[in-house]
Each structure stands twice: as structure tokens, then as C-alpha cells.
Length: 455
Figure 1 (tube, rainbow, N blue to C red):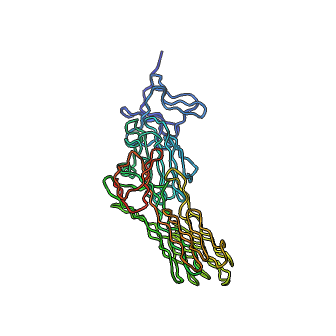
Figure 2 (cartoon, helix red, strand yellow):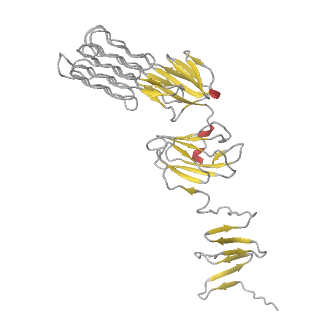
Figure 3 (cartoon, rainbow, N blue to C red):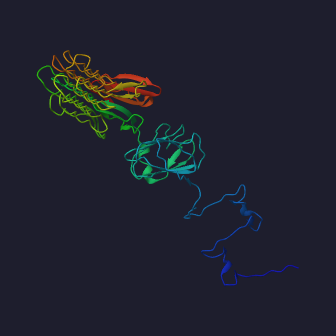
């Protein structure tokens, strides 16, 4: 014979509710209690598993069940596995279900998303040091759509941003679910990588120093420019500084190169500093000019170039002027008998092949040739004693060489502006007759004179 005991509440010996029933709601325990399920399971009246535990693994529901979180409730501690290591490198291969703290204090970071994903996969990225506005985070989609686009490669460049993305399926792909992530991915223009080099300076004449290279600016492999569809952008390529042919005088600075257009913050690469003459500080520029006899090298512009070398004060006779600064290294100081070499330039593969540009010019010497300084790698002109000094190589922004007496210092090399974009985005609308080449899936425009491009 079975017995039935009917109660609304079961309490412990201290009067605390263990089970309480009120209308159709059954409450187990009270606020602040912990409900422990030992190894085994908790089942409903039909024998279906609600909670089971085996070892250290706790399972909610049984196979085929749907486990729901009520509207307004928060599931704490589940879903995202936050990574304890701060990401500081230039690349990250993201894994679904993870949260990442990304610190771009020292460099930009490219995040590669998983090559395959399931609906509901979620990844979160957080600006750990509030530096994404300085060095951006680029999302490599890795073949999957991002907000319906296949090759957006979105860029997050706002400080203190959080990127919370969920995979929605093949059509729209990854979708940001945070309000501060949505606007950028609607951009429908063209992402542009560029290399902008200004004209190099000309060498000094009369105990003259070598000239500095034109400023070297690039975002290649970094944060691209955003060219809006239908907008025309102007590319102004700086000429090299003209040679000095008479008297004892410092060289001429090269001319600036610029990229301008509506909605774009003007990009300006500064012309290289001319080589110095006796007892003065050489002109500054993108890279600084080298000092003449007893002179000081000019200053380079931070982020664009380097300082020129100093001239020696020993003599004459037997003295050497400083070399002009290059994009890669500073110019070398002159010695008692040799002119300083120009600083080396920098190499880039933005055109698909490696090319070095923007070397500094060599300083002059009063010793017999070839004691004058050599031009830096990347097209810098050699210094000279009595012959015409070497000129900077055209379209590299390299500095010209200095000359001791006559007849002429070296002219600076003209600058260059190079644009790189996906061929699928190239409109073909240009002026100024740039050289058009391709490399893989990219089209490259090389401007050696002023022109335009319409996105």
C-alpha cells in the first residue's frame, strides 16, 4: 500500500526552505544556496535527465535537448574562452569561441579568421591598450564573407574598440554584434596602399656636403587609405633640388610629394635637405643634408628619413664633408681626408619586385678622387673633388653628391608615388599617364609626375 504526503514546503531543521511550491512554481533552495548534484543525474518526473555529472564534467540536458537561457538572463562563464596571453605580435590566427586582448602599442596586427565556421561561432577582440587608433587591427576574412562581402578585410582603427563577431552562415558570414563595429564595414570604395617619396636635395658646393633623400612614407602591409567611389585624388610628385653651379653655397632642398582628395587627410612627404657648405648647419628635410667643412648635418623628419652626417673641421687641406641622410640610415660623418658616405635607402616590394629607393648623397673631399663619399644605396649621388658630383637617381628621391670646388654639385633625384589596389577595384580612370602594372590580384600605378586617380 502506497502513501501520499502532501506539503507546500519542506524545510530543514533550522526552518530554511529546501523545497517550496507556490502555484505552478517549484523552488529548490533559497537565494544564496548552492544546489549540489553528486556524480549521477537529476531527472524530471518522466525520467529525462536535467543535469548529470561524471567526474569533473557537468552536462545540462540530454542528447537532442535544447538548453535555453531565459530572456534577460545572462549565462555567466560560458561561451567565450578569454585568452590569458596578451596579443602583441603583428599577426593572430583566431579560433572560434575565444576572446582576445590585442595590444597594438608597438605595431599593427592582422587577425586571420578561421577558414571554416558554423552558425553561432563567436569571437571577440578588445583594444587592450587603447592604441587601435595608432596601429589598427585588420581582419583577414580567410575566404568567408564579412557582412555579406567577400574581400572587405575590415580595419578597426578607433581607440578602445571592441569587435564582437558571430558567424551567421555563408550569405552574410561574420557579423559584428557590437554597436561600435558596424559603420566601417559599409565602406564600398577602394582600399589603397601607397609609397610616397619626395624629391631629393642637391649637394652643397664649396666644401659641400651630400644631400638628404626625400621623405619616405608608406602604408604597405599597414593600414590602407580609403578612397571613396567617384572621388578624384591628386598625386603630386616632387622634383629633385636643382644643382648648384657657382659660388660656395648649400644645396637646394627637394620638393614635397603629396596625396590629396576630399575626405582624405593630406599625405605629405617632405623634400630632402640640401647639402651644407663651410661652417653652417646643413638644411633639414625628409632626410637631412650632410654638413660641409666644419659644418653640422641637417635633421631628418621623424618617420620619413634620417639626419645628415657632420663635416670634419680638420683642415683644409685634407678634410671631408658629411654624407646626406637616407630613408634607412643616417649619413656618415666626413673624416680628415674622406667625404662621408650617404645614408642607405629603404627597399619595398609594393610593385611586386624589391626596389631600394631614397639613398643620401656622398660628401665632398679635398683629397684626390675617389676619397669623396659614395652615395647611399637607393640612388644617392657620389661626392666629388674637382669633377661634377653624382646626381640622385630619377624617381627614387635620392640626394645628390656634394662638390669641393667645381664645376657643379649633384642634383637631387625626383620623387615617385605608387598606389596599389585590388584589380577588382581598379577603375582605370587616371590622368598623368602613370605606369600600370599588375602583381597577383593587385594593380599598381606608378606616378613619376603629377596626376590623378578616380576611385
